[in-house]
Image (tube, rainbow, N blue to C red; front, side):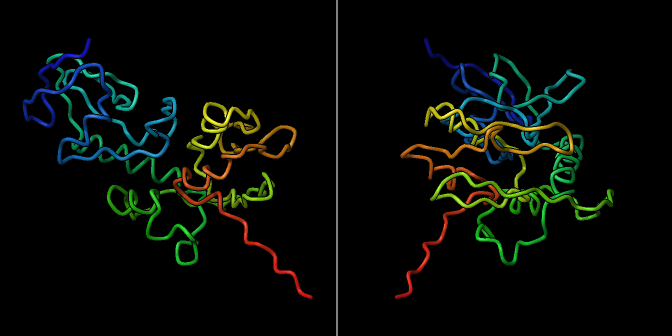
Length: 214
């Protein structure tokens, strides 16, 4: 049974609905919590670490997407501690990300671009050679630019949970992580094109139709 509980959100005491995540209640306040892997109709992955928040009297940061609000909880989303954590998360994501914003189809509507402008630090501490990732051939509709991928796994969870096609998965580990399939099979589903809209960084694009020249 749903009820209401009292919490403190950035030092403002308020009443919210119980049995809901901290990330979900953030939309009712003026302090948005950034996210990449979270999507309301998919399972919680918690692998992007952008939605980290602080609870009073707790020594470590926690994920707001997977933490349910409790009575008298004191939530902090705008401390210096959290700001530095988000800067570090974004810096790690941008280590291998291509600097192709001017020519990217997602430019201006990219979650990574927007969050970097809002929460990022423009002083890069890590200097390394950017890696390249081979593009995948998913099917006749979807074109991929996998170098842009930030491994949010939205496409993997959509394919498995909504489309019921268990083709995509996470390959390798660490700096070598990729999204793809072990057997390089096509994504065979009538709703496979939805991964294009789900992707926050335009790793998936719609293939252009080839012209037939008579």
